[in-house]
Image (cartoon, rainbow, N blue to C red; front, top):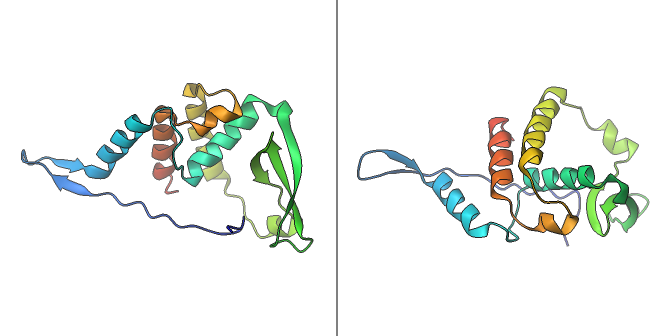
Length: 152
């Protein structure tokens, strides 16, 4: 069972390939474009930055359906945590004061990621929570490029 506190590192590799013409092709980018086209409108595995954007967009689209859920949590001293949900879709764990005290805000990068998310939101046509199970190629490209540009 995965815990909310588990960290998963997924390295991103870029492969360069020389074509017969002598030009260099970014194979990873080409493969990403092919996968994106093939998966348009279909559920896919999504990285953290894209999932975070989608959860933020869900709340922005329908803030009145935001609710609080009690969840059993083995990592919590009390044995439970409070989680924000949209219907039955978990959006975010509400952090304890202890967890918050361990964090240091990075406002510059926060402003940068907000700009990326705002740009993606402007082209995102998904409206309801279930719509976010599907893939939107343009949103993925904007979020991926923006987060890579920030080193995230």
